[in-house]
Length: 138
Image (cartoon, rainbow, N blue to C red; front, side, top):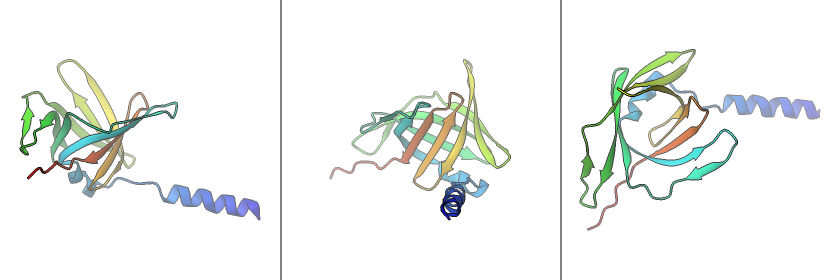
Protein backbone atom coordinates (compact mmCIF):
# COMPACT_ATOMS: atom_id res chain seq x y z
CA UNK A 1 0.00 0.00 0.00
CA UNK A 2 2.89 2.33 0.76
CA UNK A 3 4.11 1.98 -2.85
CA UNK A 4 0.71 3.07 -4.12
CA UNK A 5 0.95 6.31 -2.09
CA UNK A 6 4.46 6.93 -3.39
CA UNK A 7 3.30 6.33 -6.96
CA UNK A 8 0.42 8.81 -6.59
CA UNK A 9 2.75 11.38 -5.01
CA UNK A 10 5.18 11.10 -7.94
CA UNK A 11 2.37 11.39 -10.47
CA UNK A 12 1.12 14.48 -8.63
CA UNK A 13 4.55 16.09 -8.70
CA UNK A 14 4.98 15.45 -12.41
CA UNK A 15 1.46 16.72 -13.11
CA UNK A 16 2.15 19.97 -11.24
CA UNK A 17 5.13 20.87 -13.42
CA UNK A 18 4.69 24.28 -14.98
CA UNK A 19 4.67 23.94 -18.75
CA UNK A 20 5.23 27.05 -20.81
CA UNK A 21 2.84 27.54 -23.71
CA UNK A 22 3.52 29.72 -26.75
CA UNK A 23 0.49 31.80 -25.77
CA UNK A 24 2.28 32.68 -22.49
CA UNK A 25 5.30 34.26 -24.21
CA UNK A 26 3.80 37.81 -24.34
CA UNK A 27 3.95 37.76 -20.52
CA UNK A 28 7.69 38.37 -20.93
CA UNK A 29 6.98 41.93 -22.13
CA UNK A 30 7.60 44.55 -19.47
CA UNK A 31 9.74 45.35 -16.46
CA UNK A 32 11.19 42.54 -14.33
CA UNK A 33 13.35 42.41 -11.22
CA UNK A 34 15.48 39.52 -10.08
CA UNK A 35 14.03 37.86 -6.99
CA UNK A 36 16.56 35.11 -6.34
CA UNK A 37 19.17 32.88 -7.95
CA UNK A 38 19.37 29.15 -7.30
CA UNK A 39 22.77 27.57 -7.87
CA UNK A 40 23.39 23.96 -9.01
CA UNK A 41 24.36 22.92 -5.46
CA UNK A 42 20.95 24.07 -4.19
CA UNK A 43 22.18 27.22 -2.47
CA UNK A 44 20.29 30.44 -3.11
CA UNK A 45 20.98 34.15 -3.22
CA UNK A 46 18.00 36.42 -2.55
CA UNK A 47 17.72 39.95 -3.90
CA UNK A 48 15.77 42.21 -1.58
CA UNK A 49 16.57 45.53 -3.25
CA UNK A 50 17.41 46.01 -6.92
CA UNK A 51 18.93 49.22 -8.24
CA UNK A 52 18.49 48.05 -11.82
CA UNK A 53 15.77 45.99 -13.46
CA UNK A 54 15.32 44.29 -16.82
CA UNK A 55 13.05 45.56 -19.54
CA UNK A 56 12.04 42.85 -22.00
CA UNK A 57 10.19 43.34 -25.24
CA UNK A 58 9.27 40.59 -27.69
CA UNK A 59 7.55 40.59 -31.03
CA UNK A 60 6.75 37.20 -32.49
CA UNK A 61 9.75 35.09 -31.49
CA UNK A 62 12.37 37.86 -31.41
CA UNK A 63 13.10 40.41 -28.76
CA UNK A 64 15.55 42.29 -26.62
CA UNK A 65 16.42 42.76 -22.97
CA UNK A 66 18.02 45.83 -21.46
CA UNK A 67 18.95 47.05 -18.00
CA UNK A 68 17.15 50.13 -16.73
CA UNK A 69 17.22 52.05 -13.46
CA UNK A 70 13.89 53.20 -12.04
CA UNK A 71 13.53 56.73 -10.64
CA UNK A 72 11.24 57.81 -7.83
CA UNK A 73 9.45 59.99 -10.41
CA UNK A 74 8.27 56.85 -12.23
CA UNK A 75 10.66 57.19 -15.17
CA UNK A 76 13.65 55.03 -16.09
CA UNK A 77 17.29 55.75 -16.84
CA UNK A 78 18.52 53.57 -19.68
CA UNK A 79 21.23 53.25 -22.26
CA UNK A 80 21.12 52.12 -25.87
CA UNK A 81 22.70 48.77 -24.97
CA UNK A 82 20.39 45.82 -25.47
CA UNK A 83 20.80 42.07 -25.62
CA UNK A 84 18.98 40.72 -28.67
CA UNK A 85 17.46 37.25 -28.46
CA UNK A 86 15.44 34.79 -30.49
CA UNK A 87 13.00 32.33 -28.92
CA UNK A 88 13.18 28.72 -30.08
CA UNK A 89 10.90 25.85 -29.13
CA UNK A 90 12.09 22.25 -29.06
CA UNK A 91 10.20 19.36 -27.49
CA UNK A 92 7.88 21.78 -25.67
CA UNK A 93 10.74 23.77 -24.12
CA UNK A 94 11.21 27.43 -25.04
CA UNK A 95 14.74 28.81 -25.10
CA UNK A 96 15.95 32.40 -25.22
CA UNK A 97 19.02 32.46 -27.48
CA UNK A 98 21.10 35.60 -26.96
CA UNK A 99 23.73 36.98 -29.30
CA UNK A 100 25.84 40.08 -28.72
CA UNK A 101 29.07 41.30 -30.29
CA UNK A 102 30.98 39.69 -27.42
CA UNK A 103 29.12 36.48 -26.64
CA UNK A 104 26.37 33.96 -27.33
CA UNK A 105 24.36 32.07 -24.69
CA UNK A 106 20.95 30.61 -24.01
CA UNK A 107 18.46 30.33 -21.17
CA UNK A 108 15.61 27.82 -21.01
CA UNK A 109 12.29 29.16 -19.77
CA UNK A 110 11.37 26.93 -16.82
CA UNK A 111 8.09 28.65 -15.98
CA UNK A 112 6.26 31.76 -17.05
CA UNK A 113 3.18 33.52 -15.73
CA UNK A 114 1.86 37.06 -15.73
CA UNK A 115 3.85 38.03 -12.61
CA UNK A 116 6.79 35.58 -12.44
CA UNK A 117 9.20 33.69 -14.63
CA UNK A 118 12.24 31.49 -14.18
CA UNK A 119 15.02 30.70 -16.62
CA UNK A 120 17.74 28.06 -16.45
CA UNK A 121 21.19 29.01 -17.76
CA UNK A 122 23.72 26.83 -19.54
CA UNK A 123 25.53 26.54 -16.18
CA UNK A 124 22.34 25.12 -14.54
CA UNK A 125 21.73 28.32 -12.58
CA UNK A 126 18.07 29.28 -12.13
CA UNK A 127 17.16 32.95 -12.25
CA UNK A 128 13.80 33.76 -10.65
CA UNK A 129 12.14 37.04 -11.68
CA UNK A 130 9.06 38.87 -10.51
CA UNK A 131 7.15 41.64 -12.25
CA UNK A 132 8.54 45.02 -11.20
CA UNK A 133 6.15 47.14 -9.12
CA UNK A 134 7.20 50.80 -9.10
CA UNK A 135 7.20 52.65 -5.82
CA UNK A 136 4.61 55.43 -5.80
CA UNK A 137 5.55 58.37 -3.60
CA UNK A 138 2.84 60.99 -3.54
